[in-house]
Image (spheres, rainbow, N blue to C red):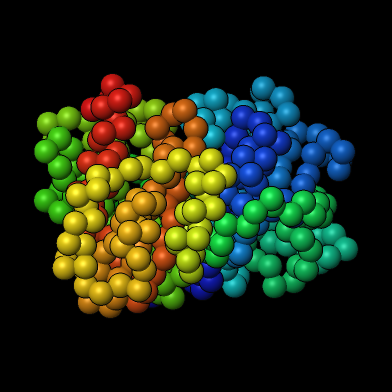
Length: 362
């Protein structure tokens, strides 16, 4: 099935956080994002404060409430810092909203238009898994820094880390719900089921999960969905669901053209990554074939490699970006491969399980 309407790309991700000002400093100093726009009390906004962070084509909006009774404050208290809004750029907001709601999506915000001296900005929202909102954004008649109500704030990052664009956004849902959300994205957004992994492909001695990868017809928007499967211990997905208090975005994968330089910069900035044993790199090229990068460098940084028929990819995963074992980031460099590192699933899950064991949650 082709897109029910034209989905162009990820427009931005909005995170609801406890303290947007401090979170902005973390994503600046840690990940290399620059602050480009802001709204808050000193711009006339009385209810929330938001910082728009950008690196390459990636935009993160960090929003916190200015009073404890605001719904954003309640959501941040329940889920911790989390991706609350997945914003998709579309050609026609009205059509996106009409098609999706006529096919079963629940309305969150009907098509709305905001205007300032930079033009007209249109958007609408529907509900996705958990409390996550899916926002349709139309920018063809808006030339401002981000959206009406925001003012430019040029604060360059201390160190750009070389992140280019959002590669994919992964959601975790409750056991037995994955097929429901696959059908939801197929029916309401016209996304295609790219590939499905069962618990035989994604399992260790202790835990397992199943996963389905949904993508737009252009391939620019990928929304994989995970659910826990039965194992000896508690899967990482179940741990997420318990600490997130429900379904939500598990991780955001960011593309780079030089993962060695990016990860080196991020580590120097204090970002922590999952570790893999040195044995992973023994006979690596015999397993994945010839690659352009130094195996020694990859081993020093803990970067994983996988190959499929189209090429290879390199990837690494951060530790959770808050004390709850919920949201984390993936850094990925692609050399032809459009996969998700299937050959690394076992190594990755064992690395996560080592962290779960330390937390007492395995």
